[in-house]
Image (cartoon, rainbow over all chains, first blue to last red):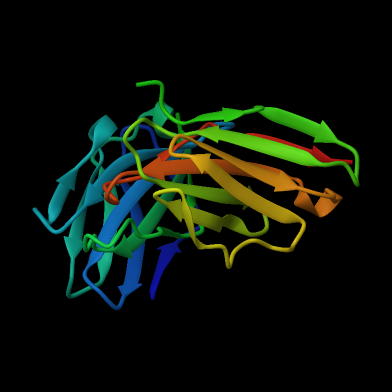
Length: 117
Length: 112
């Protein structure tokens, strides 16, 4: 079984400041980890994914996340926030693909990011 | 690639009516997931299919909900009869080999 905890349902940062969104996971099997972004009235868009290759994963729009097994964390960061980053961000976990078919994602409850000009 | 296509984008219906939501997968994807999103409960997985076969429907809230995948590229989610508490945004997503889901833009359902 897998679960995800996102710390902070709402995070506010100033434009140009560091963005840090926290995600901790629990998984009984080697995990695949994902970050998604949802803009208002839109579907979820994949930002980046960890699938057991490099532990530092780079995604779109300047975001990156680091897989830390010892801390069971997969925090999302961006060095400098932009107004267009304001959205809701979801962390998700699934079991690693084993050839038996796709596995369902378990999502966190989301963190709404506000960017203050 | 046109992405995952959902229709309609918005649906307003009266309590007791039947509602059918539609989803077209990305070509080559073999897994299909239906999610419901509300403010109170967040994202909930309702059901998922692998190679057109329902794998897990434990998230389907009641017998009023049913989902089908008549072919590899198309799925429907039906609610009959609909109730006000079914009001939510319904998303479908598809994937191949769990390399990241691609979500549709969602159907915003309002039951009055």
